[in-house]
Amino acid sequence: MGSRRAAAGRRRTKPAVIGTVAAVVVAGAGFGAYAMYGGDAGGEDTARTKSAAGAEKAKSGPLTAAEVTSTAQRFLTAWQKGDVAGAAAATDDAVAAKALLTGYTKDARVKGAAFTAGAPAGAKVPFSVKATVAYGEASAPFAYDSALTVVRRAGDGEPRVDWHAAVVHPELRDGDRLVTGKAGDPPVKALGRDGTEITAAKYPSLGTVLDGLRDKYGKKAGGTPGIELRVVRGEAAGDGKGAQESGAAEVADKTLIELSKGTPGELRTTLDPALQAAAERQVDGRKGASVVLLRASTGEVLAVANGGHGFNTAFLGSLAPGSTMKVVTASLLLEKDLASVNKTHPCPKYFSYGGWKFQNDDEFEIKDGTFKASFARSCNTAFISQAPELEDDDLTRQAKEVFGLSMNNWSVGVSTFDGRVPVQSKAQMAASLIGQGGVRMNPLNMASVAATVKAGSFHQPYLVAPSVDGRALATASRTMSGETLGALRELMSYTAAYGTAAEAMAGVSGDVGAKTGSAEVDGQDKPNGWFTAYRGDLAAAGVVQQGGHGGDTAGPMVAALLKAGG
Image (cartoon, rainbow, N blue to C red; front, side, top):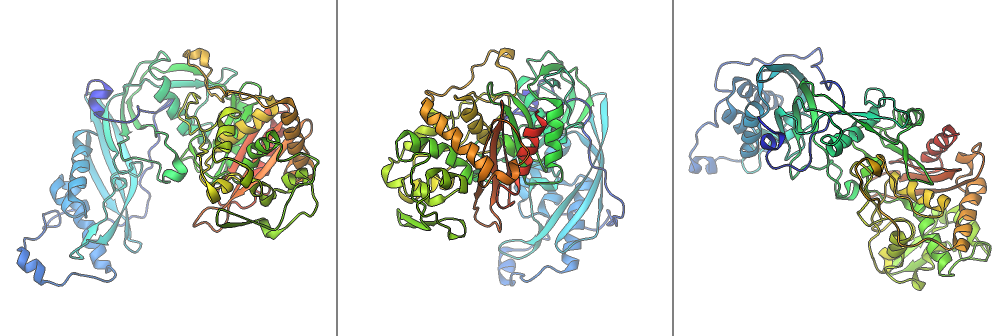
């Protein structure tokens, strides 16, 4: 295959693997095998003239069990026989299917594939694959589980396999392909700050992070490449979450099998193994949970973990942060003398602006209360009521100039989404003040917000020290005044002791501050729960998607990490 670039062709990112051979799921027991032989199951569509086809009534209604079984049999039989055209014809997108199935043998070098189908579940048919991948003298077994779904083809209603790249392999997204060849990027042996090795086997949620480190530093860490089967991301590939959640960051290629090992280079990271283990425990079994822990005075990432392990939401997520954004908004209001910690501040049940009627959780109000009380109880209208006094770009400028957000220039060591605070007007601008509207963040961003408050200035988070490769870190153009900073710390400290964060922060001693948040998301029964806090020189933030109130869900997770940090 030559160099990786020659093998992969046009691509977005480089391969990603750390350490030893990647495990591939072996087909489970209990599958009933379809007959993989004979007949015309793998052939082209039965020939019909256009006039005859047009005269026939299009098929409709639910698929029958026989249609599902025969369509799956036709597709899998043709694929196993090497009849790519026949297999593609059994799908609803023959062109895309033919291209990917051709590459399965030509580019991925998969040989002797055998397919065993399981019992259908409605229109979905699971199947297992056992094959061999061979490149030169190197070879390795290739076994995994996949599934296909049968649908009625648009137009004539004929049953066909609903074509997506994931049919070929579950790690593929539409636009991706499989390639076997020499890895352009050597493997990387990632080390913690204490010099011990960091592996995905030991810290499961770090898989995507370690992939990203190889993508960035494989050629710089001093290793030599091996031979591997990998997923090469295509132009259409994403994270399956949509632009709102994924942001603009790229997804690294993924190595499935190493046919022959390369020699890994060593790369020291800022991760603390003990704190990383604590973070793993907090997200274990919680698919929608993500958390980040930073050293506030430097920006060093001490731990990062994601439940579910399929997508690095902690670094790449793009979610409305809800009321945790009020930390940034409060700094703006304090600077503009639109709020003062102990002065009376409005917190009505409702406030209308830009044609929208905003309200507080459970429609509460605080009569004759202070801004401190409104912040601690997370009163939405206390912030929305100041929208008429603000320019459309005030929050955007504050986020960029003071907190280093929304500039798309962080250089962490792996790909990140650096927050988004767009300039908006009227109701959307008002919604942004409480972390809704167009504002998007992730736990890395919100941990950095807490760190900025604690340290007094923005320090760009990083996972690999800039001294490793001489890169420049992002900076903010200004800092808050001492008066504003002191007031903001007082607000967060009071919230940690007496406000919505008090229950989660109980038992977290020392110099602490916190803010809770919940963000409504269309189509979700429960909001995403957020929490950001600091203790001493540590700052952390977390989110639990569809978790509900942040103090009840993300709060205990963040507080546990701050305690673990000593």
